[in-house]
Image (cartoon, rainbow, N blue to C red; front, top):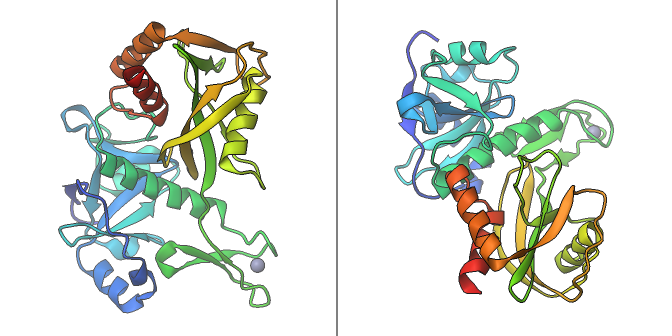
Length: 306
Ligand SMILES: [Zn+2]
């Protein structure tokens, strides 16, 4: 690319996905030959500014046609078409940045979970969307029905099998996972994984298995990880990350039993008194101010409404 890219902050409002445009080849061509904005991903990292510009941004590049298989994400409130583009074929982060005419003291590719600047809900959603779609393109390069190569269709929202005898169309996947705050009077149940920093505890969580209702997954996960049986399972809210294609579904559940028998997944599971849980929420907030995770929201909601 001969010129420098133009830097744009991400739209502050939720993007209109405009799914009907994905099949409108002429409209997409027009957008791509106009001045579309790209959200770049390199090997799982999103592009963020560093230093004083510690923010996520989209770029308007001089020669968008050089980008391989851009994925149409939607249209911002200002009417700008946004695309995701994956630079993962470039062998190093330096080369990916150089391709964009950016230097490492201006921007870096960082996994969303490790970025420690502030992000709005709309920004996080858009970054996750880009990351998740590019991840899926990497994972779905081949047809899992016949083994032939696939190619993107519908502006990147379908990966179509190139074997005419098969012609299966593959769609992006979202894997549901449950995350739950189990409580009993003025105590809540939290666990920790061995890899976590010392003193860090969080809500229990686990993927939903085929054939399970969400409530059954909550009941099973709590039982497996702590031996505790729960009732009155209530939905709280959701969060579409941190794993590339996961959707975390948050619940509250009331403990029917109190005695803990730890399963194999966690290093420790124990009851936290309300005052300890309150302190944990504050500790998590000061440590990860940018990550208003559903785990933290669940604990905070319980603490504040107890
Ligand atoms: Zn196939």
